[in-house]
Length: 253
Image (cartoon, rainbow, N blue to C red):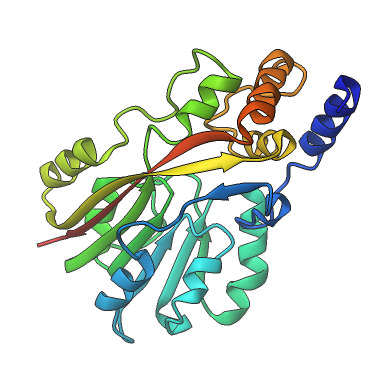
């Protein structure tokens, strides 16, 4: 494919880099992310969840995962801080009776003391003192996180020398912090899985969406690196990286 055509395609992907909830269907078939984690986040939550449990989902995205749990709406709460998703949650969650609140600062959770039995968090930020404050005695914090080494090969390919977005965001460090905060660890696991792109336009879209990892990425400023990625693609059939995930289940005594 000619250079000018590639650039045109990449810029088109850059312009289309918007997301509804957490929907990656735009690049379906052009990238693969291995999601066979050694744990099932949903099953773990449901093993602890009772119908009368007061449940909070921090950084719910568009509420898709939360709704998949099928928990009674009157016992369900959720927060979100990303403006497009906040509006989506207001449209989708509030009419159901879910106690949704906008929250952009996890150090100021808009809920009363000791009001939740279970707080879940999937790929979002959290503040341990606030978790402790809002959980009932015996309450659980269940989180699946994107680790600090997520997509590092891809970031280095497009933006050489870019620092990690979240240093210390790994299982070892977070276990230490959680235990120091007074929680009892019930489960803690970590894994690394492959991710690959078979189209550089899909990688452009991905980099624009995951902007906190691919800091200051743009087609214009990263043109040389994009052509290097294209060369790798043509030689190997894909551009590959690694995802980083960890899971923690912790109990407030």
